[in-house]
Length: 373
Image (cartoon, rainbow, N blue to C red; front, side, top):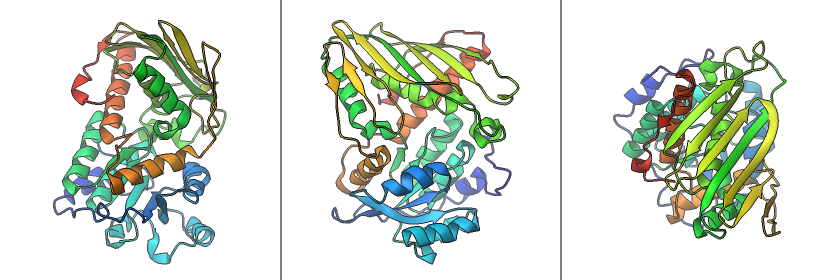
């Protein structure tokens, strides 16, 4: 398994794995159902700052209980804003001592992709349940290591797939499952945005991101194609192109891919860091369903071929996601986005990159053994 590093950090996956031997069991599984579980956010970038932390002020089953940051200025700012005690504020060097903090039940890893495996494994070793932001890791091997670490430590694992808790997406899943419009025949899943910011941002650094648009927005496209058919694909063919190579020097700019599904349905995904598109379309024997927008932070919008407009009250997707995982821990409800789902998607990502490398060769996918859709 490849070494995981960030230039400004000294932690390694090897350290995390090596310290797993005496991993303690999680203490939060038996929490009373009426108690809010404490979540510590690891990494205080824009997603934690503007989405996760605000959502945790409105959640029903969990709350913000701690932070982990490498920026001292953020420690004081967050402590004051969210009334966090000093003993629940950590940096990347003393992170492992979080094991002693009984007020923290869940660790949410919100770091650059190449750091996910290291901190997820260390969180599991500390006896904390784990939410890993998408994509789960930068390789299938790292996904396996995270899953193994959580199983060994006896903790729960979820991937930050917020849309699985979102009402428009859940309605799409229901329509597909119940075959409201018959058998699905085609799905199109587009997720992209136009990157015009700092060319030195970590998402454009392959050592930190593991890839470009595919490892970012492309994960939404893959997910959308799967829950828009209710099936895992059996093969994929992919293409890559770039119109701004001077900006996207190290990562993929735009990728398209075509899926085949077990019932003969086909699908197309489009993902890019050089276009703005955010749409899902599933067509069936007797109609179609469209979500547009389909994967932003909401509110989303949807309609069907028989003139129905999908309307649901807007709630924080992140809040719904974290509440769902908390209920899974406390009440034994289904884990709507388990680690195996993150691994499956990384298998598909690796197959897409392989197809591109081999000039658009069709790559077979054997995902039936995953036991998850």
